[in-house]
Length: 437
Image (cartoon, rainbow, N blue to C red; front, side, top):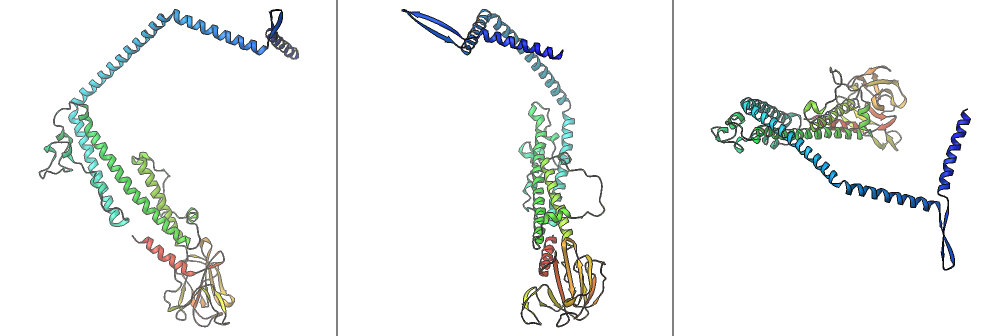
């Protein structure tokens, strides 16, 4: 059954195509002139094109005939539609005017209450301005340096003289924040729309200036916080460390804080510009705190509270026994025999005992792949596996191992490769400068 249906559809389709082909089959027109016979061949595509052109011409002729015949009726219909649209438009304008008049009448009736509310908003703005001034002073005096001209705040102070009479001035003739009000300026009823809008426009203008001043202040905060991050990044650069990776891996958490995370939005502070800058400054400060937290894990401390001098620096030197040039992988401190030796950073003791030429040796593993070694000690005060804090006494200065006299041989390494301990003391000095206000 299904096969027969498909076959019948093919037969119908084939018959339709054959009828089309037959209707536009190739034709020849014969012309006879002076005894000679010539013919013109009309191919199928020529016939189809001619038919389409003839149909288009007939359609255009019919359309033009209808337009000419019913031209007046069409124009009249369009005019009626335009007239109706104009009536509707005039009705809408009349309704809008009535609504505006009603609002204006209501505004005139409530002008006193309206101006009182505007004055309340103005007073709130002045209090906000005073708080902003104190905030600027706070930044100038302690937390960070900002511009000292304070022009942005001065531009925010109102100047009633520029738009009102002498009633808005105090006895000295100068504008005062607390001696004028919009109620005094507009003692008479509003007669123009601009008079009602002037107090609001004035407040909007001042708030816009205030926002610009806040943005400028926050730009300083962002700049200073970024400078702190950059300065701390230079500290890590001394050890070929990527500060961004260190901050990303840091387990730093502020002390005794919590609550669900809610990102700061423009609605929370009234402006996307301010929200963006606060978020940027906050991220920079968090990054700086993480970097400071991690840098405090580095072996920045000098391993002796007191020492007489450094007897051998890091680098190439003449070996004291063989009298040939050799590499010295640490720094030697001369101090009194038995002086306490301090752990230069928190970590875990991985070696505590006799270690060949080192004599009595303590090796401590710190975070970020750092280790420190303390050699030639007369006594060891810690055990392998013990966790020590910075400043913990790990042993006493001595003369064990390959040594010519009582001293401390101190090494710093990262991933097994020796580093000059002086780099860490340079980093400590840089960190102290960053911490200064």
